[in-house]
Amino acid sequence: MRPLRVNPDWTSPPPTGTVSARFLCPERLEIRRPAEVLDPLHFVDLPEIVLKALGGTAVRFPAHFVAKLEGARVFSHHGVIISADNRIFDDLTHEFRDFQLGNRICHYAGLPEIERLDARVLVIPTISSWKNYFHWMVDAVPRLRTIAPDEYDYVYTPLSRPYHRAALEALGIPESKWLEAKADTHLAVTELIVPNYPTPGHPTPEAVQFVRQGFHLPPQKGAGRRLYISRGDAWRRRVRNEQALMDLLEPLGFEMITMDGLDVPAQAELFSTIDFVISPHGAALTNLIFSPPGTKVLECYPSDFIYPHFYRLSAAAGHTYSAHTSHCEPEDPDFDLDLESFAPCVHRLLDA
Image 1: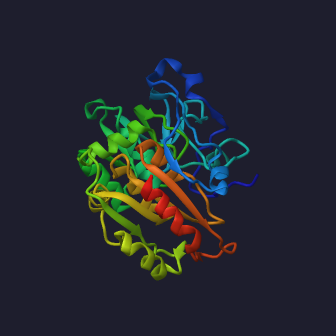
Image 2: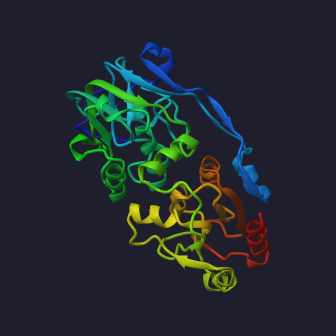
Image 3: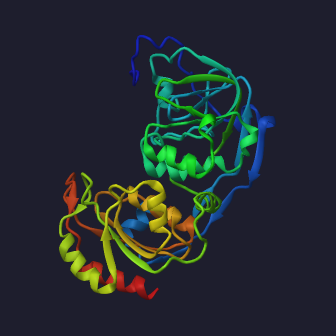
């Protein structure tokens, strides 16, 4: 396999493969929660194509542990953890697809020279959390929950997006402790502190609760707002017949909004007030993490883009979830919502 990246300035040898932290250094692990299976939930009328994409409704979580590692190092804004013998800890680092050697980094032509820092560093980046709001809020931010601030000197974190800083500020992490994770950062420290996390996009109930409490949101049910989240400001998965959709929804008390221009605290506050949200699949639904338990969620999929991220988030948050699919042409960035089959879905969920 050809290297995925060739950089003539990166001269350190790439990792040679992967290894489990639980196998290589079990004495350095602190188990915080045993493995569990979450049987959600409240779901209503999931289409067969959606159930197939979910691969079953139960959500499984591995044991949650924290690794405190000496001699290890961290690389890039993905938070890749590398052992002293130059292998990647595969239970601390995730990938979205399979690579011959277990991780894309193993196929690089080289890595940057190692920088060294005499400090205890908590690692929170996860795959794609440097550029993706969902994976930042659902996978990365909850890694802060099991470590007290006085147990580390710095938080190794991406800072390239406004939502990175907003979450750290909301959770009370002082800027003096921020250590930026960049694409070419390659760092060895006195002690790496690395919480594991489930497969990307599989938040646990305790992770959801941690984020909600960190943003100081009320635990009770919302104020009864019904929202339709438009993707009119996005570049794909826009609903073409949105006006006809709103002609259906407005008499039921729904208002249409977009997330454009709202920072993370404003989005959190907005979603804390709702009891029903309808939206095409998209990053805005990440804010379900801020919605009170029992929120009703109706997610609209184009038929060629069905991913279970927000089903799993709804399961962990205790929401009532349903989904609807509308046919779309392959690779068509937008779609028409099938209103004839959609309307009954709305009413069944209202009655649930």
